[in-house]
Image 1 (cartoon, rainbow, N blue to C red):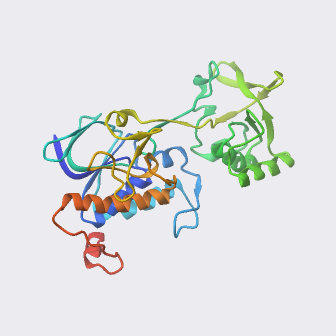
Image 2 (cartoon, one colour):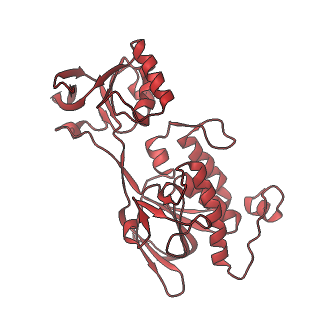
Image 3 (cartoon, helix red, strand yellow):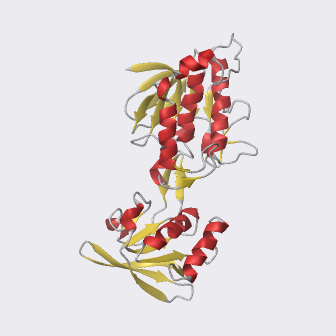
Length: 339
């Protein structure tokens, strides 16, 4: 069955959800397609408990809380979600609409598209040690789903970026022991987090080893030890309960790369007035969009979504002037919001 709609939004992360809101304020309906099984995008999927401090008016919230708030905010607009589905094909039609097909066999005819898919589909960089795959999600983890599951354990944290240091600082006070392993004693994490890790190291709550994981010891279905090789070629054999691996994420654009969009290092180039791509009617917001001065902040994505919505309104109603109205005073906005 073919569904006709004003806009298809590709991606249900925070920026995709806020795009629903900005379009809804202008009376524009949207369908949202996302490869994950629930709204929230990679932000909620990989870091649901990580605190966020730079959302205006919210002192602190975690990623899942932000997603929940956005979902509540867009309820009046009745967006339709198509989850566990990936856009596989986009074709421009003669009447200036787009035919959008998905991996689940859905077909949309839409007048505009907004790509809000982060930087595509992210995959954690794996720990490349023979035999380790058998223990993923039992003793080896690429994300922290429930921090309490790691309390009271002998933990090994691998990595030197923000995620590795953030979880080291958070879990060290609750762990039986925690060893942080990185290939050098220089870290890519925020300086304040590195300083806190050093404080925990000084009081014996964190053990820091410089080196790389090269081997493991197993017996039956149990992982007992990981071997860490140091720069001087010596090896430390560590007894562990859980290993948390944070080597970063590998972005893959997937089918988006075949749509004929202007790309720059796996990001989609846009203007800064409409956040439109080189294909009129296709916009990009959030981390997947790039332009001079781009900052990869959720706040920036929200701004981009607002301007993209006004541009789409003008595309859908080319003979009408698009007036800026304020949610505080506009009766039309109040009606759309149900207040």
